[in-house]
Image (cartoon, rainbow, N blue to C red; front, side, top):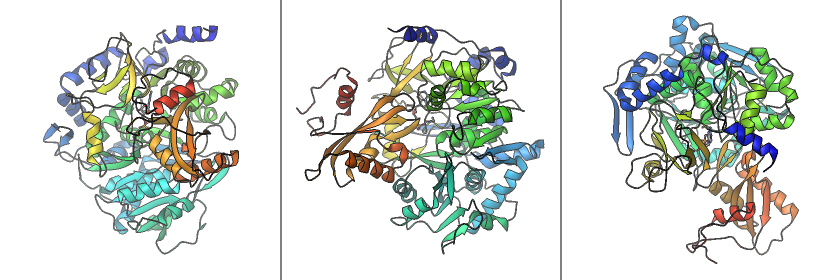
Length: 636
Ligand code: WT7
C-alpha cells in the first residue's frame, strides 16, 4: 500500500470534533440532538406535532398526525396550510420585509438582490397571472428555466394557488423534456430564452419548441422569460413573463391547502423504464425541509447561506427554495459554472458576501482539488462555519481537502445522505456532532435507519448491506405520478417487512455512523446526477446503427462515475471513431449532455442471463478487473 493511501486510512479513522466557531453558534448541542432523536423515535407523532405547531403556520390544525394504510401514509391529516405563507408572508409580517431572500449572481458578475417583501409581491403578481391563464388547484405546469429569481418566483406562484409544478433541469434535451411534459399533462410551460455557461449562451427556448413539436397537445400556453427585452417575436400561444405579470395586483390570498395536497412532481431515474414522477405533498414536506434546514445547517438569524445546486434537482427544491425560505434566511444563488471565468469564482463569492454556510457536491470539491489549493488560498474564507456535501459519497481524501482548504480546519462538514424520494436530509451529523470523513453519520430526527441483508436481518458492525428506513417520515414521497405500483415497490422489496428500500449499499460502525457505498441497483451517479441505465440504453438503441447496448458506471476522478457503453452494431454498419462520435451526439440530443457516455466499445456479444437480461454486473467486473462473482445464470 502506498504511503499516501496509508495516510488517508489513518485520517478516516480519525474523528473530527466540531471546531469552537461552530459550537458557539450551534442551535443544538450533541446531547440535545441525541435527546431529541430519542423522543422522535419513541413518540414520532408527538414529536412532529410539537414542531409543526411551533415552527409553522396552519390555518387549521390537523385532526390526526399520522396514518399508515400500508404502503400509503399521510401526515397532519385535516391540517390546512399554504407553504408560501410560511416561506413569505409570515416573515414580511414579522419584521423581515426588508431582509434579503436571495442574492443572484451570474458569470459576468452581475448581481440582483430581492427582499422578502419584494419576493412576496412578485410571487403574488405571478400567481394572479397564473389564474388569468386559467390555471387552478391541481393543474400541472412544467418549468424549464435556469437558476434565476424568476424561476423560483414561478415555483412559489404555483404553490400559492395549488398548481403542481414539475421543474425540469435546463440541461435536459427536448426528448427528456417532452416526456416529462406529456406524462404530467402540463397545461403551461415556463421557460427562458437562454442561460449562460462558461461564457457560452445556451438557447433554451428552442429546446422547448422542439419538445412541443410532438405529443404535447396538453400544453395551452408557453410563458417566456426574455432575458434581453424583446428578443423574440412571440407566437400566438406564447406570452412574455414580465408583460404578463406587470399588470397584475401585488396581492393574492394564499389558497388554503390541505396538508396532503400535492406540492410538486419531480422526475428521477430508476433502474428500469422511464423516469418516475416523484410526488411530494405540502404539510410534511414543509415541516421536514424547514427542520432539516434549521438544524443541519445551524442557520442563525444573520447568516448568509449558499447551496450551489440547481433548482432543477431536489436539492434545489428543498434547500434553495422551500427550506431556506421557510426558515427565513438569505441565500446566494449563482447561475453558471463553478470555475468560470476562473477557478476562483466560487471563493470570490464566498469572500464578497461573507457566506457562512456552504453546501455543495463532492464532484465540485474534486474539481477544485484538481485546480489546486492555491485558488481558494487567494480568498478570505473566514466567514464559513458549516460546509455541506450531497449527491454521492464523499471520499475521505476529498473530505479532508474540503475541511482543510475551504474550511481551514474551523468548520464542521455535514455529509447529507438523502434522495429525491426522501424530500429532505435523512442521514448526516449536525454541525455540533463529531464527524468521520467519508461517513454520512447518524439518522436525523424521526428516521429509523439500519443496514441489513437481503432478508432484512441485521448485520454485524461494518458489514456491507442494504440501507433501509423502517418507518415513513413527514417528507417521504407519497406516490409516483400515474404509477402507484412503482411507489409501492419502495416499501415492499424486503419480504415480510414494511421498510423503505433506498437501493443504496451501506455499512454501519460501532458508533452507529452510516457510510454510504453507492447504489445497489443499476442507477448511475455522474457528478451527483442520477441517470438510469435503461434511459441511456434506449437512447443508444434509438440510433439507426445500434442493435443492442448496455451501459455501466466506471469510477471517475472528478465525476464520481463516468458512463461506458457496450454496443452491438447492426450488421450493415462498420465500427469507426466517426460512428462513436455520432452515437455520442445522438445521446446528447436524446437525453442531454450529462447522459453522454465517455467511452464506447463495439462488441459482438453482451453477457446475458438465460432469460435474456443483460448482466451489467459481469460487464462491470470485466471492465474493472474484478472477480466475476456468481455467473451460474449466464447464458454461455
Ligand atoms: C442518490 C439519490 C439528495 C439530493 C441529491 C441526489 C446518492 C446522495 C449522498 C451522500 C452518499 C449520496 C445515493 C442516493 N447520494 N447523497 N451524502 N452520500 N450518497 O438525489 O438524484 O435522488 O439521488 O444519490 O446513492 O440514493 P437523487
